[in-house]
Amino acid sequence: ISAWLKFDTSQNGFLIARAIPTAKGSWSGVSDMCWYVFVGGGTTSFKFRSKRAGVTHGAFTNIDDTKGAADEQFQGKSYRHFFFQVDPKAPGDPLLVCIDGVCDDAQRTTDPTSGWAPADCEDSAAMQTSYATDAERQTALNNSKTWVTRRPPGEGAPTRHPQKI
Image (cartoon, rainbow, N blue to C red; front, side, top):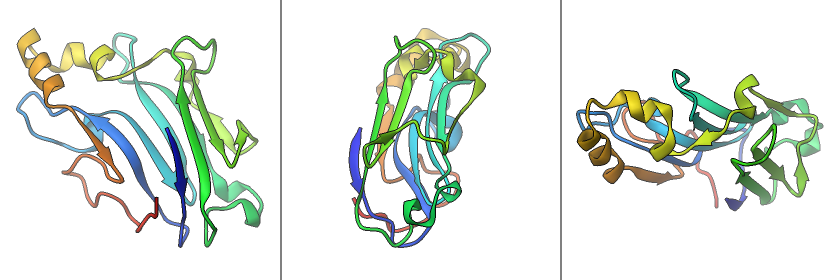
């Protein structure tokens, strides 16, 4: 995923997310997401579900821009270039986040599970336990959606700032 973004203030929000509905066909919000990209002042996150049984989420990386110098923070800036990449076969850390061509800098932290293989909706362990039958799982997958500049409805506002893309 590659995007040029501008932040008028130090707020943040969802850039893109893929989600599946609950077994009842409704959307509960963040818990429905298979993966997401959250960007902005304070937190930029890239998170996936896990293939590991009994584990809800797997690969995760986070960048806290408030720990950087003032001229590196996402506030009142011109457009910034964000690049997000996932490589399930990469040893150790399958997620890459670059901002303005800088990848994996000192502001970046990873979850201890970041070495676990990331999973999309189809491959996540949660998919195997969240639906009683194969037919329910397939219906949920058929109804999956990718949300741009918002998250699945049901848990608050889609984003907290007027992001320019």
